[in-house]
Length: 250
Image 1 (tube, helix red, strand yellow):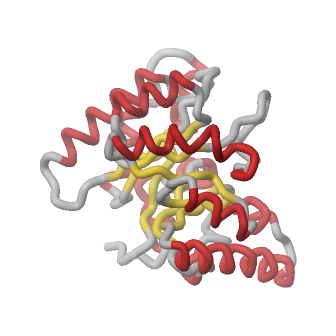
Image 2 (cartoon, one colour):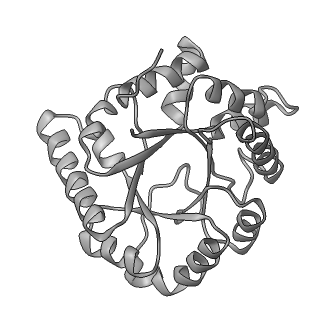
């Protein structure tokens, strides 16, 4: 099964635009879990424009409470750039997974993948530290096969394929061309013993094809799922995305 991890950043963005605590991020987390998602993702940026450190800790406690009462544990994925305060927080919270993502100053959303040739020496000790704490480590990745091999060499457990080029493709030829690159990357990761996650700009139209991606374990989806939730409700949106992944939804 391909797992769905719901990114709740946009709930925090809406809350922060007005101040106070409405909409409540924890209520959104509860709703997503009740609708059957397998994970929750947050990306606490340095500017705190959506998820804040307090959210990170509150969600961690909520998931701990929920998981204590169920066999199928809900995973917690914290994304972010490897700045010292983020790594310190991740080591304190000890989520299931930490997805390390390069951040460009002023960006609206993540759009840069790691250059392991350049950044590997910086990332390797952080990966080791996170893994020693029992945290699975994933690196934001493009489809360059050499870079994926270098990702394995510095100790990461998974790659997260950056899927915006695929999601933005317009013609069938473009879609198939971009998916072919993702497929080769997934096959390479499998050969290397790496797990594969994927994320960026998935929606209900482009997500079903990802069922054919070799070795895909997890997708994290935020923006489009939350946009659909405005029209059909959050519970229905989560179930619709689970269906698009081929999950059995009742």
